[in-house]
Length: 283
Image (cartoon, rainbow, N blue to C red; front, side, top):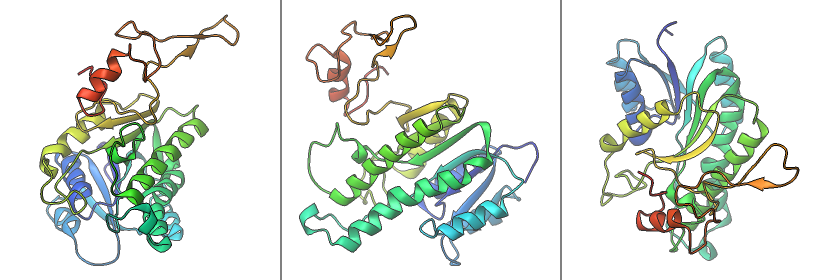
């Protein structure tokens, strides 16, 4: 790997969003390590062949913990500026009452447990001011689940969001920027052919958003346009402790002056978010 170019590891880069992100970072002059499952040739191999050494292909099935550990050992001595885990499967659009146990387990392991295993095992390779991100989804937001469908997939992305919040709390003293990325409704195997967005449309925005927040410690839930999404209905202007006030809480500056919890009729930020499909309305 180059000693001067920044390095990104993108887990799940064989096709669509992961492949697009690998190509985007390679175009920006980064060294990219992309992972694929199995030994079948993929679009990432084609990208690597044409990259003049900027793209490296590694084999990884994120559902196999020993393969995650082996990848860490192979990368020992290298530093990552970005660790990004792109994982998402669905096993059919069934109501939860009809989802077989093995299907639910498969979706939850692949979409929630395994990405967090990758993050936990590879985090020591990420430089102090680097970024750790995972691909989430709007469907992982409890606050904006207003219709049924894709129950197992929704649950897995909600679980991923919760696990990343726990991770952020566990490593609260670390300087890493932590990102849950919401790509939007994209024309992929998951999104379907009728989705309004293409991979080429959103990937530059995802990369811009990731790069913009480098060096900002803490967890953020963002879309490809750098809009903030809410996890569980908690106001982004939630209260924070003020020195000298004991157990009291003091409000952060609310742009509307409402200083109200999300859900209040007075909260203009919430009303704007509902109009814009879940974003905070500030952009």
